[in-house]
Image (tube, rainbow, N blue to C red; front, side, top):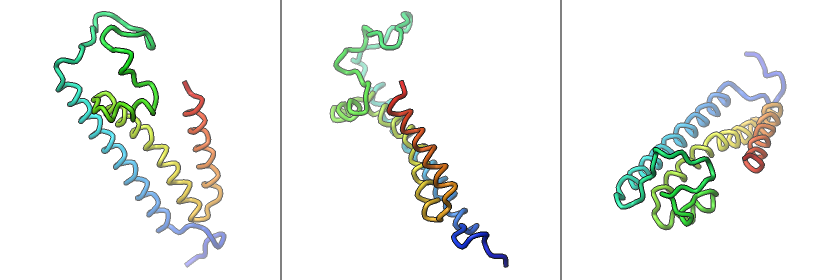
Length: 142
C-alpha cells in the first residue's frame, strides 16, 4: 500500500463520505423546497376570493399591478417571514424558493467544512473563494 503524498491527505473513504453527505444535503434541500412550494401553491389556489391577475395586460417588473395590493408585497427575506405568520400562500412559496436558493450555498459551506476537516487546504481555499463570491452576489446583486 502506498502512503499519501503528505501526512494529512484525505483518504478515498473520506472523499466518498464527503461526496455522499453533500449529495444527501442537495437532495433533501431540493425535495424540501419542492414540497413547500407545492403546499404554498395549493394554499394560493384554495382561496377563490383572492384577486386574479389580468394576464392580458403586461406589467413591467416593479410596476404595481391592480390585482396585487401594496400591503402584500414580498420583496425581502424579512417580508417573507413577516407574511408567513399570516399563512400567506405566496409567502410559503417564497420560503420554498429561499430554501432552493440556500441549498447550493449550504453545499459550499458544507464543502468548506469537509475539506477543512480533511486538511485539504487547496480545496478549502477554493471553496472559501466560491463562498465569498456567492455572498458578494447575494448582498450586492440586483
